[in-house]
Image (cartoon, rainbow, N blue to C red; front, side, top):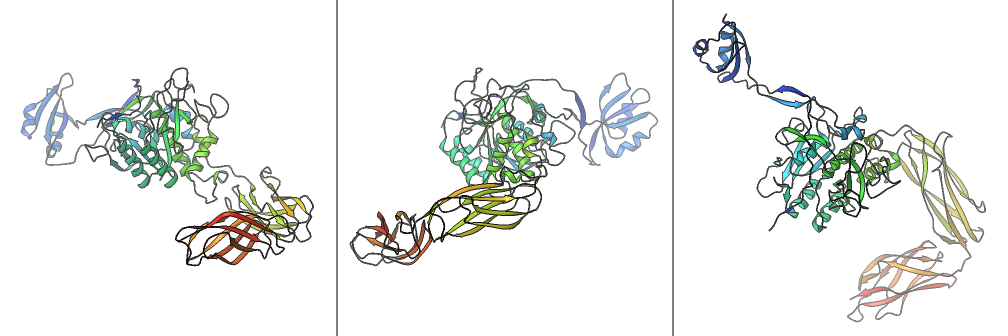
Length: 595
């Protein structure tokens, strides 16, 4: 099978850096010879070195010194010899850059979050060529890995690309090299690309699923292909929709200088991924960055300095580099306090769709106003997305659910959802009012913790209510220093004259087996307390309804029993609801009995 090369092209840029010297400690093994430099007070005495079991390697002319290997036990004796000026270990040292904040990390203001949030305990899976997991700038954060290529079980990077992406997302904040967007996030290496940056499609799908199943909170995919891959879509959908992972993907390097066309690559085009475009140091779209409606966010992607394989560092460019910037920001958001405004399910925990919405809403708009095909919602902003929400008072009415209509004399159920979107515990009043005629009003005192929510159920007896449309308003009222814009919501309830038209729209479930009993829900309108349910125009014994309960004018529950016998084929029945005043409605062919 022919391999498909899919690694994004990275534009390597060689830039000079100010070096510093660091060294590794020598092994502490007293019975072994170690490398040393011996300085003499005069001409070097190689015979003296030989006397102590050493071996001279090279003379350093001009400073009366030699390099040698000597037993560690001989160091003190030689050091005390009057001919010897000094002995020092001949360490192997490596030139590394002093740790700057890379321009991309600085541009998205990640460092402004670190005083309170460094991404601690959030797991980022780099699905790529692997990670150099013993790199001095990554080792502390690398905690797991697996290989899906066919020649090794080791997730060690043998290309460099994955290590570069890992450093952008989560290089350690130490004294060397670089620092990543989320410097305390944990890294998981899923090696799905080989040493050439190529892969079989199955390797990548397998790696995405494995990462989702093995604790990844964020999956970073600096991978692209110009054709849809069903297994990739399934894998990304599984990670995002089933496992709740934030899935970030590079938009691709298939763009053109004018920035025209829809050329976002896969998996970035899938709805379950956040496609990231690349920007330059002056906030312009990188000429190679893919464009199209799937672009969701942008991030720095030109001349990015980061970790490289074999414990080194390098510059690279591409949307491959932009992608882990966003992955790191997602980790910072997940590690921070939940913003009540974005806690859509009110559980006090960040969900992947909530993190995604927060990053989209707080992005720095670039290009055309609003979302566009070059930058999506704009440049990801770590400070805005991940900073702790400011203290505020804010209670909101977030939903009001009522039947669309009731018959006069029925009880209307009004469910109101209120949420404390602020940072303080609050006690406030919730009032529900018939604004049209003033025929119903009720006020309750509610106490909610910060971020908490509740559903309050109100009941309105419509006996004597005015026939017609009523506007129902629910309002949560707090102090004057809160946000008033989201306090109230309205809906309408129509009060109908008793005996109005009955309509049956559905029965669920709508099929059952002969000789069994099931519970069903019938929906429609015009139902009155005491209504009955019957079945007409079918073959064989008719099913019967018992325990019929009119929930409201739109909903009935009942228990249906289907007798045995009848023709050996499905029998289709009409469903009728009949009110006590003999008004009725019929759902044609609505219910089926199977043999």
